[in-house]
Image (tube, rainbow, N blue to C red; front, side, top):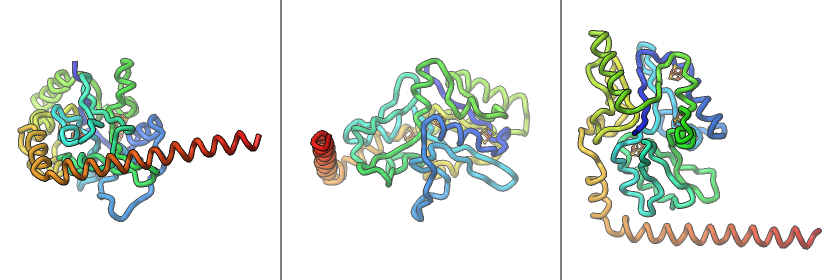
Amino acid sequence: MSKGILTDVTKCIGCLQCVSACKEVHHLEADEPRIWQKNDGLSAENWTSIITKPGNRFIRKQCRHCLEPACASVCPVGALHKTKIGAVVYDSSKCLGCRYCMMACPFGIPRYDWDKIVPHVEKCILCYDKIKDGEQPACTQACPQKATIFGERSELLKIAHQRIKENPGKYINKVWGEHEAGGTSVLYLSDIDLGFLSYPTNIGNKPLPDKTKTAMESVPFAFVGMGGVMLGLNWIIRRRMEFAKDENKKKDSADE
Ligand code: SF4
Ligand code: SF4
Ligand code: SF4
């Protein structure tokens, strides 16, 4: 069964405990603001953030774990994939740093890790290891308001529709992520429009991989040529790092 998260914007008090819990469990370092960073709090060291909107509305941003992820469809080396349990995970050892996933994501989620010697992208992984072990993600566990909850996607959808039905006028009659871009595992209930979480603001209900794949393939140099160049560079950098490591080891044993 596929898992997911439901965030109810009307319950969130913006305490940031979900953000701190994510940083702690994934050993994410203090963030260094960059001038080119988007103004949404996400970065390679911040996999979730809280966006403040007028009227004390706080909206938690994280990877939506799309049912048909555009990021995975454009990755030339298969570094990202959708797991059966619902999480879209990535293998940083495969990542070329080409950033196609960043261009393809309709929610502006993956971020580049500028501080690594071999840079790659970072994003929320739905606490994949924890949920595989039958636990819940650190962020949902930390929320004191139960504003963001974890469960089966189908159950979360039922809960969301029930809340809308039982509280007439409280919510916009829509569960964000139920159908958008083919559906996502991270869902939202809200009393304000959450269109700003996607680019463009109205992305429609069709899965994006077909569109993005076709678009990337229609630029053969970008998709194949550049991918090959990046793969080659990545291999050279890794070989150099391994060589430097071996040299250091030799020096250390000579010093002993
Ligand atoms: S939100 Fe973006 S990064 Fe997350 S799974 Fe969907 S396309 Fe990929
Ligand atoms: S699900 Fe895990 S990785 Fe994703 S935002 Fe929550 S704590 Fe972070
Ligand atoms: S922990 Fe809960 S209430 Fe606090 S900011 Fe996160 S989602 Fe909102």
